[in-house]
Structures are given as C-alpha cells and as structure tokens.
Image (cartoon, rainbow, N blue to C red; front, side):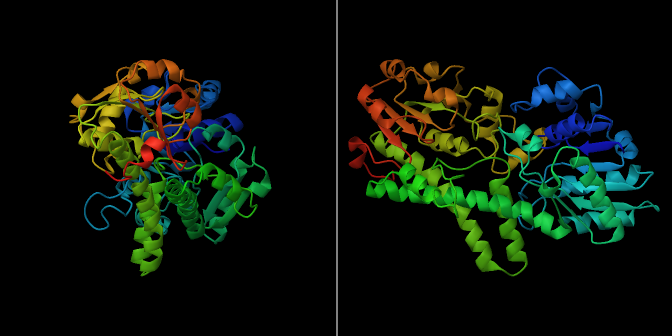
Length: 480
C-alpha cells in the first residue's frame, strides 16, 4: 500500500486520517500542516480538537503508522495519495463576497503539490468545494506537471461533530467521484480499496467528479432546510399555542419524512451549513438560476430570523430592556459534545444582548474564554481564516465574562439563556440557581432541554422555543 498524506490538520483531516491509520495498520499516514502549534497539539496529550473517542484512536496509532508533521513538502512528495483538507472560507471581498467560496488555500496547496512531486499522485478533495473545483485544480496540476500524472478525486466528508469517530467507523456512505477514464477509474479503485478495509462494499458509492462535489453541498443544504423548516413552524406554534415538540413528533412518524433533524432550536451553526448554502446560492446565480438561488437563500434567512427572534423575546420579556442586567448564557458551542464554536448561534445571541447593554456571563464545558472573546470580536466569516488574520483585540470584553461553573454564571443574574443542549444542563439544580438570581427570574430555553412546568413551579418565568407561552409572556410583544 502507498503512503497517504493529508494537507490540513483540522476537524476533518485529523480524525479521518486517524481512523484510516487505525483500520489500515500497514499504511503510513501523515497529517501535515503549516501551523506548528496545531501540529504540536496533535503530538501532545491534549489534542487541538475535542471529539468523543478521538483521543483513544490517536493514541493507538500515533508513532506507529500515524504521524503529524510541519514538513509539508517532504511528506507530500513521498505520498501516493494526497488528501487536501484545507479551509475553503466564504469570500469577504471581491467577486462573490459573502457567498462564494474562497479557494486561495486550495490553489496554494495544488501549486505546492505540483512543485514538490516527483512521482504520480492521486489528489483527493476532502474539503467542501464548489462544483467544478476539480477542473480548476486539474488545470493547475497539468500545466505544472513536468511529465507527472495526476488524478483528481472528490471524496467529501459527511461527519457530524460529536459523533465524527462513530461516523468514520460506520458511515452511512463513502462517496468517491472521479474522471470516467481508465486512469480515473483506476484512481477511484485505489481509494476505494483503502475504505474497503472496514466499510461494506454497498456503502461505497462511486460517481463522476461533479456529482460527488455537488452531493456534499446538497446534503448540507437539505439538512439545514429541515432545521429551518421546524424553526419556522416553532414561531407559528408560539403564536397559536401549539407545541412544536408534539408537532415534530407527529411529522416524524411519517416514514417518508422521518424524525431526524426536527428539533426546534435557537438556530443551526457549525462550519458547513451556512457556508455551503451560500456557496450553493452563488453557484445557482452564476448558472442563471435565480429562482433556485432565492429558494436556498431563504433557509439562511429563517435561521437568522430565529436567532434575532430569540434575542427580541429575551429583551421584550424583561421590560423591554436588558441594560445593566446580568444574563447567564449556558452553552457557547454550536452543539453538544464538541468544542466547536464556528457559526454558533450563541455568537449572534450574545452580540444582540451586548448590543442592548446586557452584562453577559457565559459557561460552556468545552469552550475557553480566549475562544469566546475571539468569536465575539470577529466579523462575519473571519473565523474560517488563519488565526494570524483574525482580530486580536476583543471589543466586547468588558460586558462579557466567562465562568467555569453554571451556578456561578447565574449568580446574581436576571435571566438564564440555554444555547447548547449539553446533557449536564438537564441535570442542574435549578432551585439552587433560582435562589441565587434576581426576581423575577427568567429562563429562556433555546434548545428545549428543561421541563418548563417544573421550572415554573420553582418560580421561573420560562420561555421555550415553540412551546405554549408562559402567562407572563403572553402579554409581552414578541419583537422588542
């Protein structure tokens, strides 16, 4: 078997290569990155990302057939298969700003591969990229080939953070797209042989390049669409007295729909959903499909509406002002079982509260104070660029504090907002929390993790997304 190298030691590259190394012990797998601190993290006892089960996999393989290195050029030159898992952020300026994917890092990686290669290579797109990216990469490699043959494959990841290792061990499908030529089919077969070591043959799907590239964008768009759909219904439930959990349960019993991704919330987050839908919108516009672009853009608009609706509910319920009031925020990661804060709804909610002069105290079991302050200081889309290009002087720091305990965060607060569905928030002693808060004590549940009636008996004024409104809230306007 050939040596495998992955460019990019992030949320996708690190876990994916660790599992390949575990399942293919005779294959040398090297993850490379230009960031020395990130590589040092992968070589330490505290990995740079949190993912259940990842530590165990890395410890089993690291130093045996799994390596992490900053010597990018040497390992790329030696590898037969090169995965490229670099950032593809949304452009912040120029043509397509705010929608199109910025392929600067991908192009740099392709030029570097062409510069250092001395033998034929299979280059695998692992990053989420626009349709036809492979064609552009192919041109760069071909025009700089020096007689070397390159085959470009698309092998998009379908990992969910919090369950990434389980998703890699037992994937719903592995998708490999390649050119429909003898050389292209041979490259697809070579990569398929790697996955076939542990993935059943019927779960490995092979397609042409363009189908594989589009499938990733479409899959994320469909998942985000389901979340925005149930969130839109949650607003109607509050207006009519219906319970969104009961509605979602009823809908999910239909086998044509199913129960997954039907939990109403303050909004979706993560590195992929918004970025990929904006990318899809831009591609549709470029191909002269404005109606299709408008359809998918609405998924993002509903998500933004849900976050602003939540903030408005908080402010309007608390006598139309939160100025000078302490608001405890429980949860900052975009979902439980991960420390990832990219595009988390908590950023927009906290910025909305701070904008109304609230004093915000945040607790999350996996997110550091440095990360919270960095996120709140960033402009939109900045998070997906290298750290040295991100803002370093947080402006909101005076109004935002980070606590290492949920009770401390809520001590002396006027309100509590639950923004991440961490299991520990279901088990908190809310009587203890209530006793240490100003009265009336408000609790705004953006993830529907608590029993509203139980908390009302304690004394809280409770708002839960999509649930029948507290009698206190019925007299309050929904929009501040």
